[in-house]
Length: 247
Image (cartoon, rainbow, N blue to C red; front, side):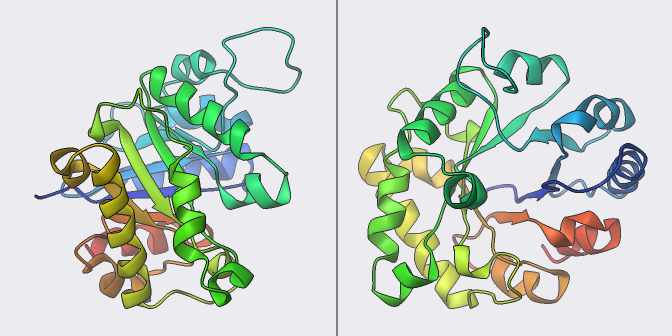
């Protein structure tokens, strides 16, 4: 089954308001029709970026969200707030949320359910640390993180899995094309066990570990790699669009 490639840029804690708007406009101007492109700016610039890309093909995303609808949750952002700004997709379970900021699997699961139930595209991140790969725990770790997904998910077009080997994020190291495909194939197989083959054939699985224009073509040529979750290379329009051009 043909799945439209989805390349998403996670800007993390980078940019200023002016540079975020300029970057978003440059990416939106170069959006190809054959690839879905999205960017996830810092929360404080979502409104400005939303206005800058209005009417374009570029999807607006958020790097995180809280699972409660409203209330006394200082510093948190709700799904409705994000939707109010035009956000279309939200990341959950990013390795930095898990391993740097200490989010539990239960917290990630609640957030993932809130994103999907709120009507947005859920980009659920999974992946192993170097020590886990070296001890043969890649598949069990990825399986545990897939288990965070709620049974309420019924629309495969609003579920995206991002496989991000933690050892290949911001390190300059990268999984080989074959290593990426192996884990992506495992993910699709596990999704089919829980849902069905038609469902899993429509779910897009992104690779998220130091994808750049010079290695994107080989990764994106793999049968189960349906896009990328891009960090550093998404902070320059030419490199981000260069990845899209590799599709």
